[in-house]
Length: 451
Image (cartoon, rainbow, N blue to C red; front, side):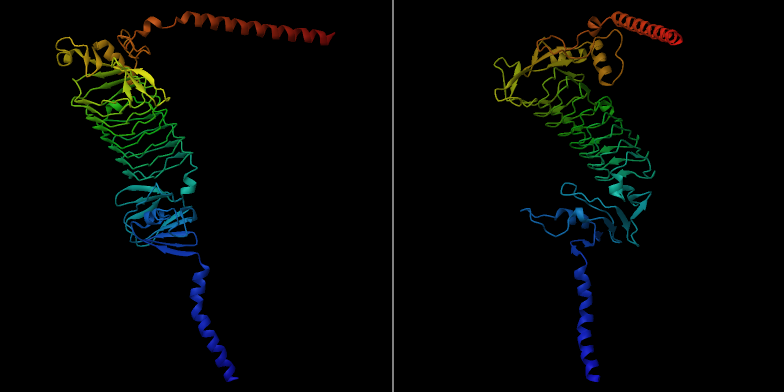
């Protein structure tokens, strides 16, 4: 009997020692640089933990670096030693159903369903990302928030309305990228910067108020915002319009730039197909090559403060010029190349001596012409979305390349409202006759039924 007990004990000891490893084997467990994954739960234990998990999903050959990806994560724990979180929005997205903060973390909290760094007053994002991505309206961002973090609302396709707290200073990179149902947004007067790609692919966005506090707009901030209005851009204090900032903003027709502007980078306004007139209030201005690439309808560049320091040789992404130098050729549309007339450069009377001291009509290959104050006022009114002065000529450029002035008087071609009133009167008359006919028919039916 004693021998049997000893035998059983000898067999049980190795089994008991092996149990932890067996349990671990059954658990879906993995760990990496700054993170630990177990059964759908990702614990971030260092500041770079999340970006390391996302960024190293695949190596340069496309092979997986570890067996779990962002799609496997349903719950995130922000460890007690994490002071900030860095993510790589290009590599992958983490869309957990819940996020919690490990006890002892002095930086992060969950406030009204939002992950917040309370030390920097930065909104990192929603604790329940999956639920947040189907919200139509967001109105409960904590009032003390000063920074909307990187990718905080990225790809929230259902989002139509969001209330930005009155203390917000900056919008992080790609914070509203892909929010293609968002139609308008109101920024507080405290906002100074809009990060790169902040509103990338917000294809329904038509209005955003840009005030004098705005000093920086990042690369591609409004890329592919096809319905965006430009009416408040002039009120900002930005110094550089960076590349891709207004790429594909098709609704732009007349754009007024701020007096603080120093440079427009290449492809800043690329593919703004309806852009016709630009107004510049700054001196010492540089406009780089291809700044207006494939903006073939541009006919007027208005300079209210002297000549620019530099205008690129290929401002519109042209392949070559016509022999007379008045038009350019682009093969963007077809292999043979299409020909488009260069715009006219307009200057004000105050700077006539600088532009045309001897009555010159050309500058650097562009035709130049003085603009009247009345014409300028009309252009500025249209650019700002205001009603043009009654006596002013319209600021819209004509489609005819050889026109001497881009400001034809629309009042001469305005349609007479009288025909519209006659049509309305006839329509009302016809409706009245029809009503009478219906009443008569009803009376006749009653009489027949009585018989």
